Amino acid sequence: MADTGPGPTSSAAARATGRDTPFGAGAPLGRWVGVPVRAHWSVLLAVGLFAFLLATVTLPAARPGASPAAYWTAGALTAVALLVTLAAHELAHAVAARHYELAVARITLWMLGGMTEIEGAFPSPRADAVVAAAGPLTSLGLGGMLAGTAWLVGSHGLVGYALVWLGVMNLVLGVFNLLPGAPLDGGRLLRALVWWRTQDRDRAAVWAGRVGHVIGAVLIGVGLVQVLAGDATGAWSALLGWFILSGAASEEYAVRAERLHGLTVRDVMSPTPYLAPSWWTVEQLVAALPPEPSRQPVVPLVDIDGDFVGAVTLATLDQVPVGRRAAVHLGHLAHGSDQLLRTGPDQDLAGLLLPLHLRGGYAVVLEGAKPVGFVSDGDVERAALTKRADASRTGGPQGADGAAPSTT
Picture 1 (tube, rainbow, N blue to C red):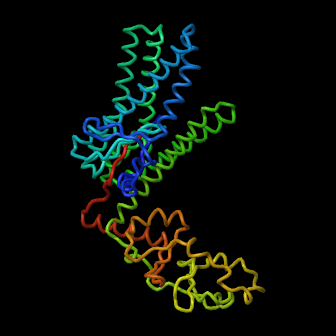
Picture 2: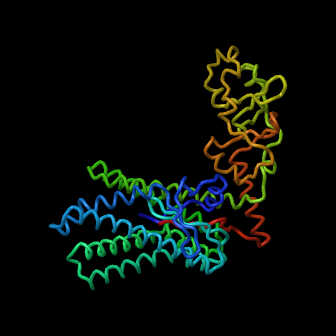
Picture 3: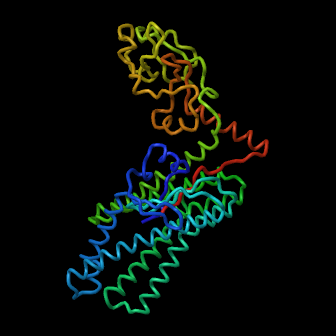
């Protein structure tokens, strides 16, 4: 299990969509030290899986001779105890965040671990590092305490071995989360270190995200090799790697979104997009295209009233044979308006960032049904760089968290 959390805007986004947890519906577990704690339904899957493996494989192999009922009882209690220690890891993040007067929205437990959603900007690299380190240090401390307790009571029986197993799992949890890649706690520590050295939190977050990509890819590769070798537990490693990859990407997008705070689509769009009537042929459009249309790889189509009805890409036009271009109408080639990303001129630019990336890198800007502009991911990136340069010249902030999650 790993401390694998969402990007900095996930907390607000989850509440805006009415979700109990960032992953969907969850069950309340009360308030622990004043922090709401919820469990996603996938926790039941994880607890059941650990209980099954302990009761049928681990405990019988390590301590043979007990009854099936004893194995199942010990396995179930140990699996629940693991969940409690996982919650302690997350509570440590929450307590440390409160020390720096940061609000903690909630803690979520799920099948791959836990997540602490912290709202607000870290005041310093030191605060970032302290909050990140609190979780792994707690897990390592619990691991040592459980191992010591097992030594005192003796590890020959089921109870003693269960304590040893819990101690080892917490030690593994603490060490794994110190890997230096976002969204793991070690990635937060790397971010804090680079932030301290460069005084540039944006650059620090990007570095942590890049290392997170490498860690996620390695875990996926190792997991796939395990599966191909007949070890089904490799699927768990691959799933964890995939989630780390997703978390790292979310971190990088959150940094870019922060740079765009306060800008709207109107601020960056090309206000006079090149349009074409939907009844034109490909030949007519090719003849009428401006000399350098590369900044607008999509041509919006309009009907006789000037309303948007779809779009064609330059790549699609190029695929039509020259001999057929006079006979093929644009309306027959058009992507439907539901397939092309549409936005309004007053849309917050930060909110457009991820949809723009996922939907091809460009969008048509509509006021009502009328196309009034065109925006590409290049336009957005240029705006981010310009705003960042302006902030550097004026001495303004170069990045802040909207919410700093932790991942276990």
